[in-house]
Amino acid sequence: MRKRVGLVVFVLLVAGLMVGVPYVWGSGKLARHTSNAVAPADLIVGPTASETPARKANPAAPTAPTLPPALLHPAPVAVDATGFWSWTVLDRRTGEIAGSANAATTQRTASMIKAWLAADYLRRTANPSQSNLRQLSVMIRSSDNNAASYFWGLDGKSASITRLIQICGLTDSKYYIDWASTMVSARDAARMGACIGDGRAAGPKWTDWLLNEMRNVSSSQEFGIVPALPEAERATTAVKNGWIARSDGKWHVNCLAVGTDWVLSVLTVYPSSKGMGYGASICSQVTHQLQA
Image (cartoon, rainbow, N blue to C red):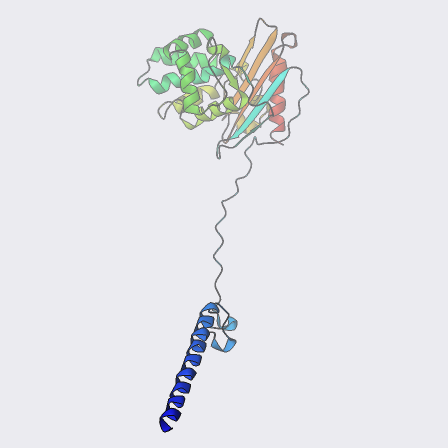
């Protein structure tokens, strides 16, 4: 009888242990599944919001100084003119350009290209002869065509225009037939002027010499931009204009000037019956309005 009672007690103890163990495992499994739950507030470790150290704001980056506008600067331009006209003004300090809506349209350079022909020759010639320097001076100051054809040959003709595009970063221009027919846009003409002004065109040795020649062109070559400038600016402005009345019955009159902190180019094409002064007037009107 005692053996039977003891056996019953043993069986009950074993059964109780088997019922309790699964409950503990189940609680453990539940704890693992809910481990991402937010802990009670009294268990959060770390500083409270009021104890979090304040971060100092980063100092503002210094702003670049604002340059005053160049003498000639972007402004609305309106000209009542027949035919084609375009313009571009370039800030020599920043390289920024602005111009007419058709500033990328190309026209013949005529004599305006002579400034590049001189620069291209001087950059590539270590010691130009005195005779050639005199010829260059005549070509720039008096716009002599024979001298232009001479240096056009020495520069390799179309190869010179290829170098112009590469060295001065032109985007629209191209060689066409001869030096006078080189096709250039107003914005490329301004880039060419900047290239002459900063020394890339003629090189460090001859840039000042070339700019001096362009500042001393004969009075007949100063039409367009220079007469529209303030008196104090005229003496420091380098010029190379171009003009030609072609057999197609049209004048091509172009103006290029390199100032102290600006470059301006104006291209015009219009009926020959209006005369050369018509194009010169367009250049002057554009210049006046870009000073507003």
